[in-house]
Amino acid sequence: MGIVTPGFQGRPRVEAPDLPPGQYLTPDFPVLSAGPTPRVPRDQWEFVISTETGTEHRWSWDEMMALPQEAPTVDIHCVTRWSKLGTTWRGVSLDTLLDGVDTAADYALTHSYGGYTTNLPLADLRDGQAWLVHTYGGDDLPAEHGGPARLLVPHLYFWKSAKWARGIHLTVEDTPGFWETAGYHDYGDPWREQRYQGD
Amino acid sequence: MTALPYLDGNMLDGPLGEVFAVDLSTATARCAHCGTPGPMAGLRVYPHAPGLVGRCPTCVEVMVRLVRAPDRAWLDLRGATFLQFPMPLDQPR
Ligand SMILES: [Zn+2]
Image 1 (cartoon, helix red, strand yellow):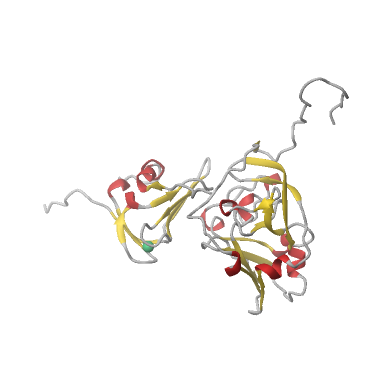
Image 2 (cartoon, chains in turn brown, cyan; image 1 turned 135 degrees about the vertical axis):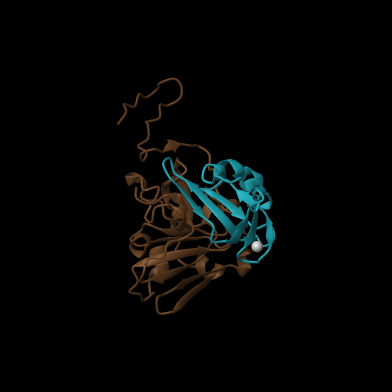
């Protein structure tokens, strides 16, 4: 910890942040996209969790907004090497969405409006580690950042936090997603620098 | 909010030239989704992503993905049913 000097004239000194290996800090929020930005009106938006037995759990926008809301403040780490600290969001915990979903699945494949997919172990969506977020920095999540709603799984590289989230398939077998089938790591832990397959 | 720009397929010449010995700038590719053949240079390439994503200009489905690690590269062409290259005329002996 740094020493705080009350009354010091000038800008407060910022501690060098503890970033995952190979990352740099950015004050910006770079927009990454593998295709055209989907525009999904809220009155047509829905989110679907489907289980390995084919059971579907659906939420309309209003139903999702009526669920208990949380306001996580988290650091995010993009595999393209930028990190952004203290980002503020609002949304529904995946614990809330998965409550009442009867499943024996070990894996989850998130799918998005626009066709994007990304996979992760179901355990990484539980225990306060993941949210379906609709608000960023106090404002509606803009479409270029994944609005109306995106996944937020900040303990993994940010490609796992699918923009324009439409639903999650729960599966017994792991199903690699869009980037995971094209060389990127299946799990993507930034603290172990799991960028590419074999890392 | 402005839409993210995409680049035309000519920008793939450099990155794919690292992988291929042939000149892809004059190649034709057929979309596996809609079946439309067209020049590689006509793809819509989204470079602001963890890899290069080349999409069909007709149906916008993914035709080409190229991921470049420091020491490796992955080329995924499942969205293209063929690549056609002009070749020097094979003269009968
Ligand atoms: Zn097509």
